[in-house]
Amino acid sequence: MTDLQFVTLDVFTSTRLQGNPLAVVSIPAALKDKVSQATKQKIAQEFNLSETVFLHETAEPDSQKQHRNVDIFTIEREIPFAGHPTIGTAVLVKYHLHPHVDTLVTKAGPIGLVSQADNQIRAKIPHNVRLHSKTLADAVGSNKEYHPGLCPVPQIREAELKAPVFSVVRGMTFVLVKLPSLELLGQVSTSYKLDFDAISQSLLDEGWRDSFVCRYYYVDLGEEEGARSIRSRMVELAFEDPATGSAATALGSYLTLSEERRGRKFKVTQGVEMGRKSDISVETTTREGGDGVELVDLWLSGTAVVVLKGTLTVDI
Image (cartoon, rainbow, N blue to C red):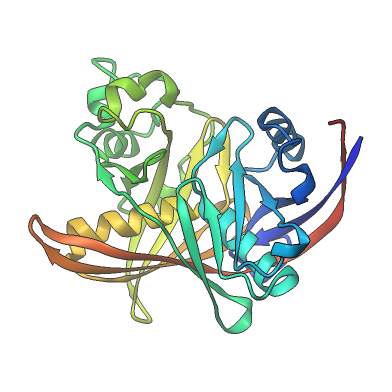
């Protein structure tokens, strides 16, 4: 029997009980090889949040190292990268635990951290972007009009079928569904479920099919304070996510490469419809390459507030 310390935070907000909840469980260096993948998965299921982070502490001689390794789990699987776990863990590490740490190491790669005013964090996100060749119209076959996994509202369903499928890193993929109005965004529902695991072979390009996939709905609101303003929702498998930083970085990357053709700032507001407003900032830089505009830097920014601190007892 072992006790592990944990903290929960509300992420992409400075107001408690808003934003997206996150659990961060600290793993002492002595227990690194004793807390198994299966145990981490069960702990994530116990918290039952969209993601749970396992923060690996270093042994005393290495305590001044400027990086910390993290593992990110949903209730179903480990994933290589996610946005609100990155920002939430970064706020916890930089402002509450280890101010000298400047890098979180995820399965997708190292993420550089920059402190900003008002407990904000600017995180440099590793990226390996891919616009897939197919859409949901290709993957669901001939039953497009009545497929139970698609939205029954005709205008939303048509947008789902033709939406680009875009990976921000290998293993994190989003169907980017653009809607023309906030009224339609409000009609998006958790009542219809599309099993992306079942259609990934026909939806994703070869070599990219081992991936988390979900739909990310958005409305473009135009220019606001030097940034492109966007309202969004992430709804999948009877679940709505109050803030999806990985999807916001995917959307910002896609719009930068396909529409803006230059570096751009994006202000994304998510979670409004479920009463957990979240404020997400994305910034891109670009350069001209042999095949056109290339993405150089991808930054994700936001803050978080601590809500709970406690001890988790596990049998290992």
